[in-house]
View: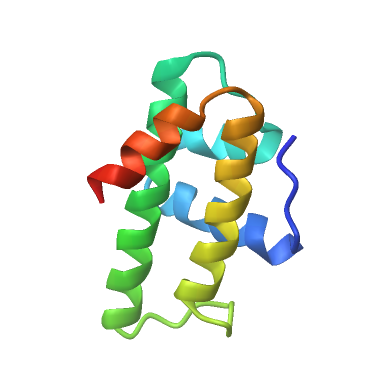
Length: 101
């Protein structure tokens, strides 16, 4: 299970998983399970796609239900996802994706 510090953090991440039509990431956000390296890599890519989508939304003036803004929630989600992937043994996959950014 992913440990979220705020319930809004999970809601925010799930909102973008749905917006990006990413059922695999949505399932991970809900149950915190990863079955293999390819799935872990997919989750890592999803995070950065979520960041890009949230920036695009902000630049387009899309009003979201989270008043703190995308940067705040992206940082919270990043910490939760990276901690969970590390706990599951996929720290290298996370670091490799971070290095691409």
